[in-house]
Image (cartoon, rainbow, N blue to C red; front, side, top):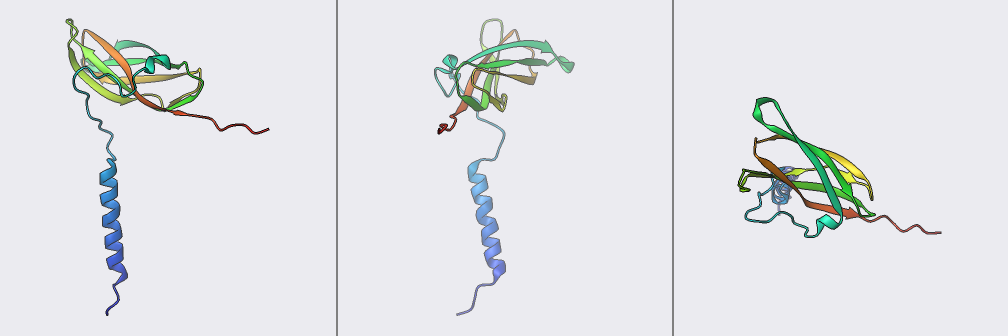
Length: 140
């Protein structure tokens, strides 16, 4: 029986890594929600409050910036926001899921800004999803 060359193992290993990375979806593009869905975590309003304003940008687009306030005592990480642009009759004309702040401390606030939004009559912003990071118990 002939030994398998090391280069063959390397090729197989690289191919396996490529398959795993592709399966994990290393994309920054997220599916756009369809229908009336505005969050992956119902009840987010109990934990967070959003304050934001919209300002014009160059080229006719809009910039939304504001703060997310964490009303919960635990750190929130990986916050994503759903931003919807609506026409005068309230119909969603554009929406996107964007990364918000990387984290918001318990009972704290964090700044976010979202650029290059289409000009629209008004906007809505929702917390799409997040993770709570519970602190470790302190031992005496």
